[in-house]
Length: 66
Image 1 (cartoon, rainbow, N blue to C red):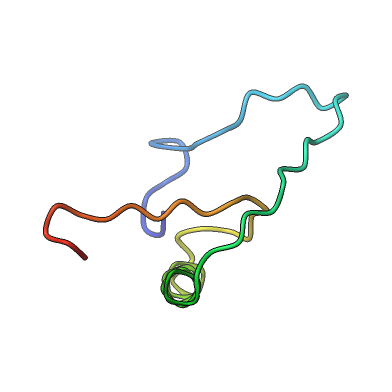
Image 2: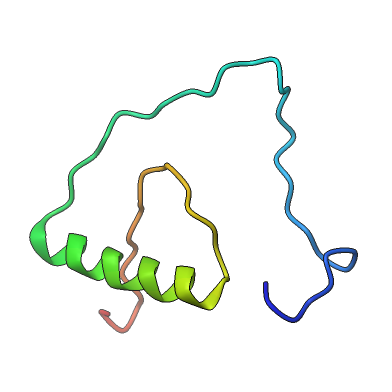
């Protein structure tokens, strides 16, 4: 997260480096969900909040319907 020192808060995955990464099966989204996910991902990548990651995206509707 930009502006926060890594010694205060940092996320690490507890993974054994000798193991091969597991590749998930690709899950296809509908056109609307795909467009929404792409815009959200681009916004977070441009802000430097996240790094590129190979994983399936899970979109969840908020209680207000967005």
